[in-house]
Image (tube, rainbow, N blue to C red; front, side, top):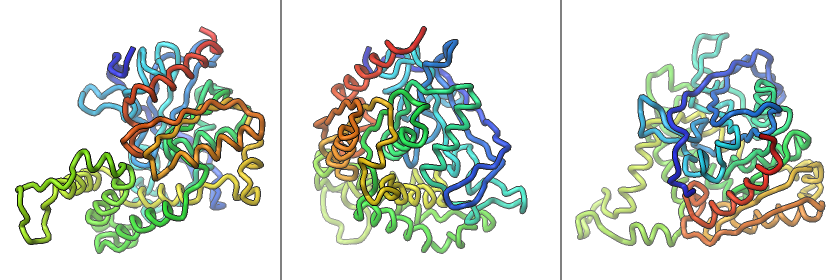
Length: 380
């Protein structure tokens, strides 16, 4: 069946409480805390058919299906996950989790700090990909899942999947890393810093405690999203969508919105500033910057990935200049040097980094074929 196969249908998120504090990489222990979760499909008797989906920067636990009260609110990877889809919920039990520090129901900067009765704000600790994976391992324990059939994710989610393979190698059979990288380039870190500076220099930021002032650093969030969104698309994709089209058909000789691409970016920025939290944006982009498994092995990625025992599917996209195919090939080479089983697909797609969210037939065929292999290993 295609990406237009039936949806998971109406779904309900569940908040799960963890009382024991979580030791963080920043040498703080944080807790108690809540993680917002959605599940799709049925966990089999021996709990061997579970798939964990790790989300990217601005996504959440809402991976598939829709909410009855708002049928238009469809999961961000609904074209990938569902009955008859590449990750088939007739076969697998899929868990979508919202990470600690996010703003979609899990404990994060806008959550009330029980010690003060005020939102955590700037006092919320910086968390890392390692911290998220540790929290996800506790979530697996909550469900009684000793070993995932697969952990998968795209972009930042792919970093989490990769970290799973080396931090808890015995707890996943397969690792699916899509449109990701073993570490950010200097250029990527620079983009993230410019976006963060747009937020922290917004007069409404108030050092991260804007909640107390009843305001949102909307201008900074808007600009941060516009900067980020440019990097998620390819030049060819933007040219095809917008070219140099003018909204009015002629120059207006001013500094307002004249080109269609300007209108599109401002629309994306406005929409983002309505639903995303500025402190969460700062926190997650910093987690992106910090991710570098080879930091502990003197920059040797092969040595860093040596603990991994999973089988791997790795996918990259030809026009993804944010997380270029060369970065995925670097991971593939290191895994092969460790004699790991790796399947690699490089998809020639025009959509840039955002291609991992779209229903490209070749991309979905590669994922489908891989998960059909996994299904053969899972007991009914």
